[in-house]
Image (tube, rainbow, N blue to C red; front, side, top):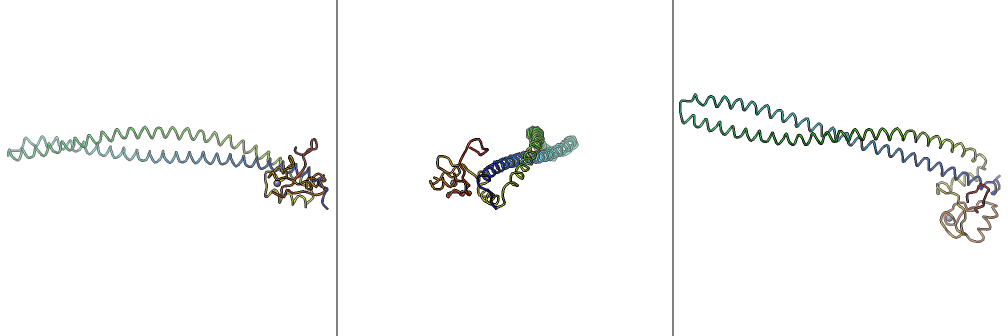
Length: 245
Ligand SMILES: [Zn+2]
């Protein structure tokens, strides 16, 4: 047997209020989880950037060290070659050897110049890596802070949701299965407001004009009356009986 609509309607209104509160709590939870996810992604991307730049920096450092070592070796060789110049007895051979030494010294000077430029670039890269490191530390601290606060907030949201679930079960147990099934069907289509008050002769959901005959049906409350436009259940706002104004 179906319950009289006058009894079931206030219960359904309460149920829809609980359901929309539940939906808001779950949406808030989802939003928090997305915030945390986003913050973690940003942190990981910064960390990857930092690692990559740091790796590049170390490679360049090693390359410059290797180049400096090679230039020092070449310089030592040049010193030996210069010493050897005085031992040449043939003037022409000596002249040509000296020319070669000078050519090699010129080349080496060019290489030293390039190492200096590389070292300047290295300094700029070191600065960039240091800045990234600071950014990573800052992001990690912010991420941790967000994680901690979100965790607490999510816990409290879940607690409130659990409380609402309890209220829902209690109210739903007072409603007959037929009306409850009707309500659930409408809620599938209109999760936020399955039940709406008639306002100024219009449906509070889709604002379609409610005909005079239908208004009479709503006020008689002999059965659940659904809007012709959107199928939400219509009710008349009354004061002081727990029904939403
Ligand atoms: Zn409607």
